[in-house]
Length: 432
Image 1 (tube, rainbow, N blue to C red):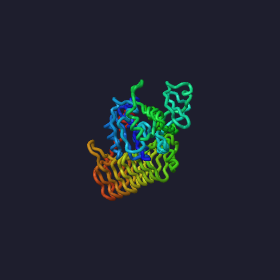
Image 2: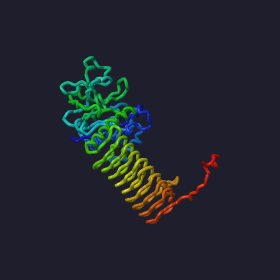
Image 3: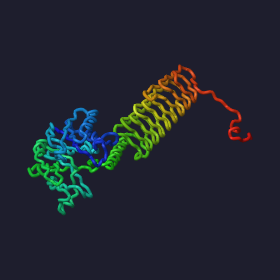
């Protein structure tokens, strides 16, 4: 059966206490709405997102990444509630799956379970040991009879541990009939999507409960929920990569972006953060190092190293307190305490302690080009734009602001001066 997906993302999310729309808050490197879109794309190519609060901003961010997404701008003031969000929404296929944009943990397997079978409505339900605060889903003979809010439950209904998880797969023909009939004649003056279940039961339609895991259907409504969801997603991400062969020391201390990729034998030590769409191949990232949107192959970083975006490291050693930014290093050693920015350094070159590429003049960034087998002595400043040819030695403490030719020694120092017996004169003491 052909399937369309509608993702509800119109809410203001006031409990987030943020000017950022709720669905654009990030979890493991990606907006929670984008996690929902990714899951939806595994089961359908007809996806509609319902927007209202900061709709233009959300649509702009979606359009920058995804193609073929449809949008429905809802008048949430006139049509509040989950049922109101569906007013006027049109889908193309026989069946429509309705998701929430604040459920970033849902998986393809759960969506497939919700969209199989011949029931008129498949409804996600969760069994909770303590269902307090939730509306109860009353089920008999494996069919949903009704949804009862807790305040309306009688004593037997209060004992029910099955609650509504908020996701529905509905025959589109029914949806098109039921949504216009929804009423907001209730205490909250909202249109409830749950009312379509009662309509279907009253018509003798089949409403099938699909039991799902609570973890996947957690809604994110606050910063506390956001942190809890990230912990769950991080556990999933790291579990999959460890199964794929990545070694992690104290994995609970490690952060891995959902866009990161690993190949070959990789090791991540405790406290490591791998951010953005980084790619690591046969590399070792040591304690408390950060890698951001970079490519690292057959290299090691840290401890306490930082590789900033658009860097490429191949066959390279980056030691403690070394920062690399938007640079390409091939076969390089930079053991400690260096800043390498907007640079290209070729194989066999050594970058000493305290070396800085002075790449920014306050207005523009400039390139530093270092060739093969170059030895850059400690505490050297390379003032870009500058090119250091192959087989060059640069003396420690030099400031290099001109190109250096192949095979040369470059040295730039103020002459050293000494003043005999100055210590004793300064402190007014006799020489011992």
